[in-house]
Length: 118
Image 1 (cartoon, rainbow, N blue to C red):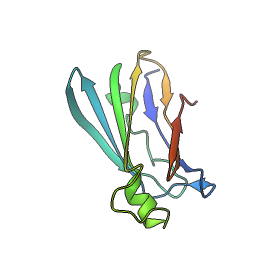
Image 2: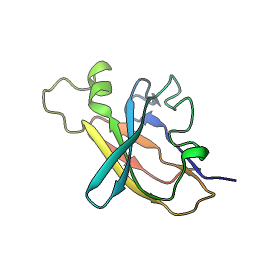
Image 3: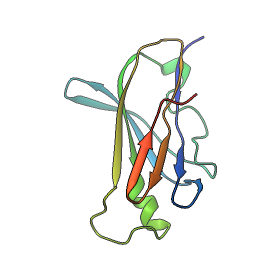
């Protein structure tokens, strides 16, 4: 079994999945970031496929960037030019070559959290 990475976004302020959030995935090496994937959440707040599928999986350090500001503006939760949360980066490591890593984002206009999901 090869490892892979999934993610999803929940809007905790509205109590629903966050549809239409662009997510970029970067591989991080020192001060270098290399974009390896970009996708958009579906109506369930998930991506239609793993953002890093098994055939592309490598252990290492990664960063997911969630473009939350666009979503918050679109849903009427933020109107300011400068948002408290706009692009939300989450840097994490994946060390097990056979594991399913799941990194969700729980989002509101003024707070966010994440955890290693299952």
